[in-house]
Image (cartoon, rainbow, N blue to C red):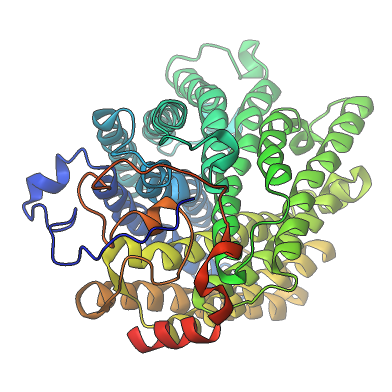
Length: 555
């Protein structure tokens, strides 16, 4: 891309100073402000879900059900799963970073449908409202999977309002995906061909396809479960001629692709950060781009590996097992290319890059244990144990959250024009990484030894590992809380930065101010070179020593 540096625009009006009234925020069509609305919303939901997790871990410090009755414990892990999966993990990167960055990366003034973009956020809030109502009204106890016939026949908790909330929230995801796809197709700057797109855009494009194709399935499935509970239609209830396994097929047809809605955008973040802080062009650009397409295709053909013990035939289980192994190829392509990008690079160990290292370590453990679960015999052994809990937390939380933290630190100077305190941020990252491993690694052992998940009590032999896990959860919570505190502090007291404090490539860094003006660019940028062309930058020979000094001085 063009290397011309945009003159400083710090004194000019930007999107943050364009208006201070509540109306200017809650009725805005600016994609950057809508990203902030999402950031505030998902952060609130993250801490609500985190409180449920903390209460669960307190209960599990002792073998007996001392703190909560089993029925209330069931509500805790159900609400934790619902809030975290549907209201934090799925929208985190696309709705926050995607909304803020996509038009900037494309050289566009906004997304294709700005009003639809704002509507998506209001739809998200409407869905979240139903979920909050459910919490206040007493919660739901079905698990976040809502398996039938328990959810439709036996449960006396608030299943209907929460599935209605999730049905509504699904439209937010669909509208965002549709908006992103049209924007990428129609609003690229002159010269920005498909193979000059930043890999973050490729990731958002792949995610949008899954959102559009998969989300309607889960929305209709949950709506059918709600109608079944109210009107006893006999769709899933075997007593009425229905098939409960049909619910599982429909649920996992979306919910396995949803894993890629969570992790693929996070991988897009990693691409941008690893190449910037290694000062090298990304290794294997086209392989990574096409790996995103591979994730889209295979995400829709592996749902059956969640149902190996649900009564499907051995041959079906064998096919789903093989397909699940094949998904690992695309993950391996990305991990290999990130490692090759760093090889002989001038690596800078700033906070975003530390989170990249954390992501790679945790995602590698999550991915490899996923291969264990793809093996039929081992899957039967650890089915519904804490091994599964540890695996999906390493993939979803260890992968997605570490990537989100890398991205929010990387683009924070662009979003705010301020630098966060680097030394405190590194300390918080260490807390998050160490706390996460202390929380979830013991759960691999617990699961392998046979401790089932979703139980409020357990035998005495598991107590030591559960105490370790609870202690780790405390450190993890402290790390996240510290992160929020210093980010909010930096909004008011952080030192101002220029338009490109990381000396990164990309239109958002080289052609837009920090923070950007309302319409992003003073004139439409023209792209003249491939992305990540660090080799042609004059500052490359001074990196990382000079850059680190500059950044630390500002922080």
